[in-house]
Image 1 (cartoon, helix red, strand yellow):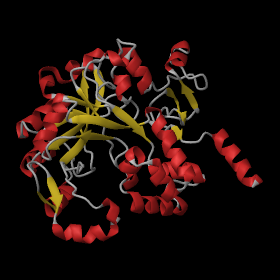
Image 2 (cartoon, rainbow, N blue to C red; image 1 turned 135 degrees about the horizontal axis):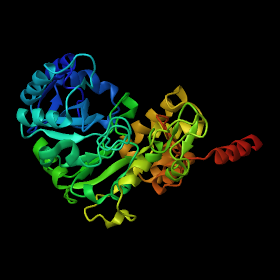
Image 3 (cartoon, one colour; image 1 turned 180 degrees about the horizontal axis):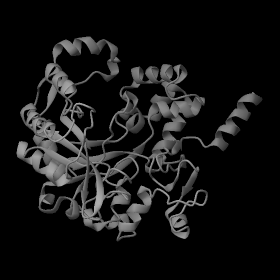
Image 4 (cartoon, rainbow, N blue to C red; image 1 turned 60 degrees about the vertical axis):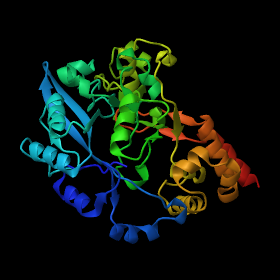
Length: 391
């Protein structure tokens, strides 16, 4: 798991105090912290955790006559390299204000700073399609990687697809075939952790992880775990304030104008991908890594019980299932349905089976508004409520 935010001085100090070296380039919690937190973790989820030093940087700058806003993920194998990056960035902007610092620095120059700190660092453009803060974003991005990173492009080996796009969408553009597609999820709250993830079968050390990501070797890079892209808050076009959501075709017919306020709509990820795509069949890309979608367990339970995902009803059942069956990835992706039914009941087993089969209700997100992904559609829930009332 990435530590996040290593540029923030207070968090950097906490990382140094609470982590200790494990395998090359990776870290583990020290014994004191483990003893403090382990009693709060269900026995079914006890395991060896490893941490990788990481941070996300926001670059806002002008290039080729336009304002650019690019987010980048940086990973470091050592505290020394991370400290060197921090020292340089501290001279450029305020790294104390936020965990994800906003700096007035060209993304190419940021990449140079990272590579100067250590050639073993990883630099991955983050959520590359989101409209406002991304490499290919419709509002402030570029139409090619070279336009952004120029002669430094060779140091880019992977791209993060982001919540609002999935691998199949990215496979439609041949220009990015040379890059491995990774799926990560920043954790704005603990329950959001792991919404997207990479499943690797490599040596447990930073350098083999880096090489696996660089090569995209299917024997080592097994699959990515995906958020349904429609749930991403910039999947479709539209205006949130006007409650107008539009498909790329509808946006084209309206000449990019909102039918309510008659201003330009925010062009979403799907539209932006299609504007650069040069294929119709995603399987035309040769080096494809398998992927699977999931819906977080608390959201599935929320849909079933028709209460909030963090409500007492949901969380009580959530921890009961976790304690019995193990971690959430195992439950959602691999656990036998019979075991899930035994612990959680037939409705939960049915719901997880529906998610695995992709038989779900989806209302796409747009202009900063998260989409709705539910296991049971409003109509199915209405029928279920009527049946329950009858009995």
